[in-house]
Length: 76
Image (cartoon, rainbow, N blue to C red; front, side, top):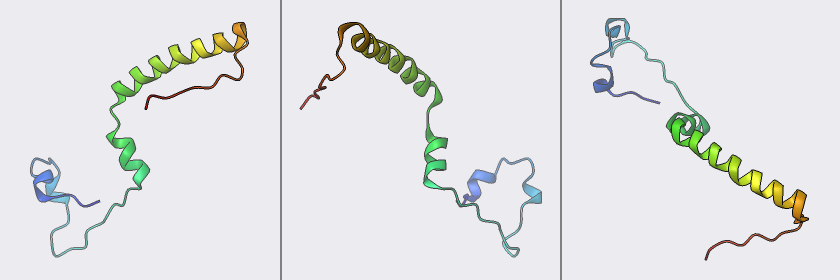
């Protein structure tokens, strides 16, 4: 991952960064790490709460209504 110069303009420790004549370190992030950093954690928590409600209803249907082999259909 490379950072642009404008990202570091307001950095309080900018004077410790290597100059253009020095070697700079490069940081490579995996695709999963990049995606993890992009996740909006508040939306994720809302999704988990919703999933909990849905899974609870499916468990109830399996346990009390013997719907072990239900086919789920999607919208087309």
